[in-house]
Every structure is written in structure tokens, then in C-alpha cells.
Length: 534
Image (tube, rainbow, N blue to C red; front, side):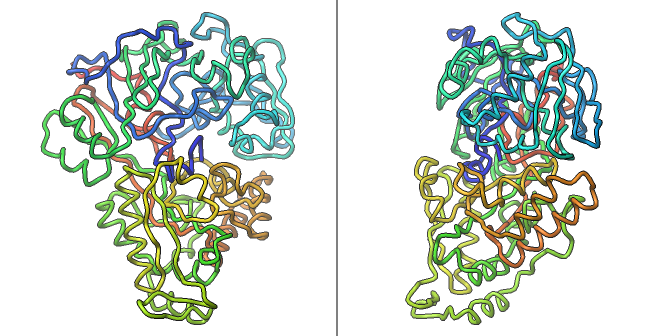
């Protein structure tokens, strides 16, 4: 879950893959687009909920692709199929799936005019894997034994084992060694003054307000028609809707109940994207209430997922029983949980949790009560948190709902529950491993619930290290089955992403989207290819 994968879960979107460009803050005084385009078809002002912590791929920015400042060796098309980007073709895979060879384009330059070569690829991957680099997602590349350049135009990856989804990892953006290699990787200027090969370059970044980009005139894929792109950072859903309605924005991501208020606007279009984006409640293992298996199992069947889909999402989504969506080929059929308050009460009764005055249960002097945080300004998470708390109370469990900034929430994640989110439409390893592998507990937003289950750890390793799809399916089925017995998270819904956009462009498309959306995902996932409506 990317820069704030799970944080976005909690943080609503860590905006990985920032629709951004790549020049070293080359024009900090460039004109800012503070209002919408007015229909001119050459500028776009988009409202998103969060901004990235960094614009450096070395620290996790854009790791899932669609980074408009940078390109990866590969990219994904509208059907989520891999296609060449900085590589000339898909990789040649040999040695039983442990060697990946990429032939590189020779017509690519970075936005400062320097040529892109194989050395930049080696630098990027080796820097991320360096123990001194503060990249919480370096585990994504755990399978890499070595990466080597053969001349300027060939890169060879050698893997420790046949990691089946490795090619999907190579959408990772490539950083220039001649710039990023000169400063401190964790604190250097490159983190806010990026240079890349992408279709856009960064003009200005006003922290907490906006990022402004210009079309890269030397982009190897052709100069974009949208010449100026502004991503306005507006955490509050209501304010984002108001600014869209006033014409201050050309487009925005909105929760379903706000998006529907634009249904009658002739000058706006609504675009929906299916996703792997889930909403879930973390149940910290170290909390005496949420760490109790009976409490966990009771909550898992006490929540009315169908009602959440109908009422909170207005049908724009589906019930979630784990990170894997129910319509995925990797979903373990039979792991759907019923809505059954009677069964929830039996779990609690059998474990000695007795109802006391006020209806809240107790056991050995411990009240069945815990705090549940959601990020301020996120109406959809707030609604999920309140619905969850209402369902929990019906079976005698108290979830005290509170809001807070990420600065408030993050230090409390080890003891308090969080209305989190995450999800990737790519390989199941991308979600299950960072969320559930016990050794990742406490590492940023990885394994937020500090989940510990040796059987799950074993299955995750088997799924990650096997090259046989049938064996991998059995391993991931085992993980999902274990979550029915000992859920460290209560998965609630998989949500569709809803966007409202000025009717200035035609033929907008979406991909199946990850949790991290806003900058890199959305109808603007391929903004460099947009055409004006007239």
C-alpha cells in the first residue's frame, strides 16, 4: 500500500503516482492555475484529497505506475495489461523465471536533456534496496538478487526465486543517477525538485495547496495537448465539491453522495471506476479487546456489509471479505461471511464476554470497548466508521469513533483501531504480503494491525516464491481462509471511485484502480493523451 497505502486507507489516498511532471522545479515562478480551465482544452485543474510526501521514486513515489513525472520500464494500458514504456518490449524471461532481460529505448532523455541509460535503471533499483534508503516499500523488490547493465541499452535482473509478478513491479519509475545520486537519498533536493522522463515537468509545489505541472516539450511519447496541469490539494470532500461547482476546479474525486448532486449539470460528466480499493477496520493485536479472537470473529459477522454498499456507497461498490475483491480470479470462494448477529453473540458468550449495565460486554474486568479513528474530512470513512460502530454496539461491543489528522493517528495505530484502506488490482502478493506478514508489523503503514499468524506467514511466502499459478492460488486461498478464523482486520467494502469532470474533454477512460488514486489514477491516468472536445 504505497506511500500511504494503508495510510490512505486511513489517509484516504496517499496519492502515489502523482500526475506530475519531471523537471527540477525548473520554473518555480510559473503562472499558477488557481481556477478551472474555462473550457479551453489546454489546462486542467484537478481536486484531490491528499498530496505525496515526496516526489522521489527512490522513496516510494509512483511505485504502482502512472507517474507523470517519470516512466517505468513498463506501463499498464486501459485494460491493465503490461506494455513497454522505457523498455522496447516486454522482458525476456529465462532460467526458470529467475532472469528478466529488458532492452531499453535509445530515444529517451530526462527533462534536463541528459540521456536515459541502463545505468539509471541499475541506480534506481539498487538505491531502493539499499538498507539506508527510507523506502517502506522496498519489500516489493525482496526477490531481486541483482540488477546489472549490459551496455547502455540492456538491463538484466536476477531473482532469488521465480517471483511470478516481477514484471508488474517494473512499472516502478526510473530516477536519473546524475541528479538523484548527488544528494542525500532521504533528504536531498531531488525529493521536491524531481527530474524525470515523463510527459510533465514540475513547475511549483506549494505544500498543502497545489502542485503545478507543464507539458514536457521533449517527451519521447509526444508533447501532451494538456499543456498545464494543476493538482489542487483539498482534503475536505465538501470543499472539493463546492470548488468544483464554482468552476474553480475542472475535475475532482468525490464520494457517491456528493457526486450525485452534479447529475443535472449539463457541463459536467460523471465517470466511475471499478477498483480493488477496500475500506477496513484494523484490529490491533496488542489491544486487549481488538486482539481477542472472539471479539474479532464476532465483529466479522456483526457488520452488515450489504447495507453499507447500499446506503453509504449507493450501490457503487461491493461487500469486502478481505483485500481480494470477490470478482477477482484470486478470491477464495466460500470465505464470504454472513451478516449474523446471533452468531456474533454466540462467539462472545462462549468466550466469556458477558453483557453488563448499558449493554456493553465485559470479561475479567475488561470492558469490550476500543477507539476507532478515521482521517478528518473524509466523509466516506466517517460514514463507514459510524456504521461499523452501530453494528458493533448491537452485539455489545463499543467502538468509540474519533477523527484526527494522520499526525494524530499514526502514533496510535499500535493500540487503536483505524478505518483504513488499501488495495491493488495487480497480483495478490501486492496486498496480502505487506498487510499480513508478521515481520512487517510496525513498519510504517505495513501490517497496521500487527497481525501475527504463522500459517499465514508460511502461505504468504509460498505464494510469493512459487512460479506455479495453481500452487500460488492454493496459498492465497489458505491466507483468506485463515482470515475467517482469526481476522486482524474487518473488511467492509470495496468502493468504486467516482469522478466529476467538466465537459471539456471527450473519450475519458479509467483503469481498474488501486487504493491510491487522485494523482496517478482517475480519468486523468493518461492525461498526456487527452484530446480537447472541440
